[in-house]
Image 1 (cartoon, rainbow, N blue to C red):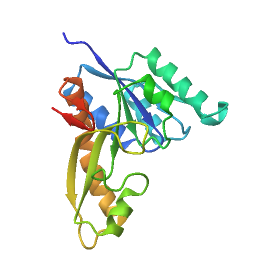
Image 2: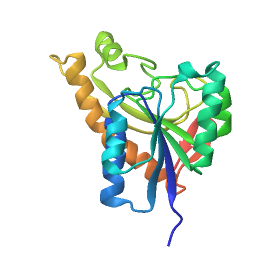
Image 3: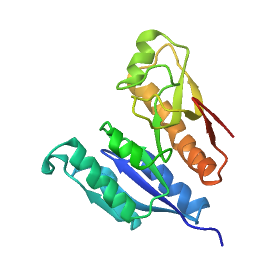
Image 4: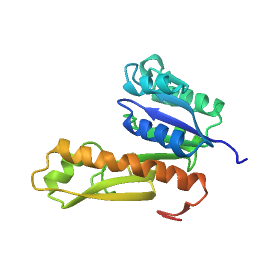
Length: 202
């Protein structure tokens, strides 16, 4: 029997990508476990999803810590206590400190709603529409100390239609995120991703 692969997931909001990971595990991947979900928002709907599926989850309020570094150190401690193999950011609306990233080298991934390096940061779908691109999409990448600058693991494109709004484009990209994120986790779990500088090979 293969070793259980343990995920930590950081969330702030609805948790739709968290749900996609949960569904993938329950349907296809019994040797993967979401060992801990941490939310920086007490009312995040992602925490309700955890309750429904019996997943250990906690709310950690950044305001109860002296500063950002103290908060991140506390998260590192909780994640290490849970023996996490990979950390997935799923709508986590905070920039991680260098201390956090160095605690889990090459073990933190994020999904972003653009074809990086295009349109990093907030409001990527709005940026894409304003720029007038014909293709948008999503990217799963390793997290480094920059904003959406880590090595790219995989990407999926979607067409941009003339009548698209930020909402319609976001919905179409999100549907692809839900497929792409589990695929990226599976590749990492199977040791199929090798980082070579800025590039990854599989």
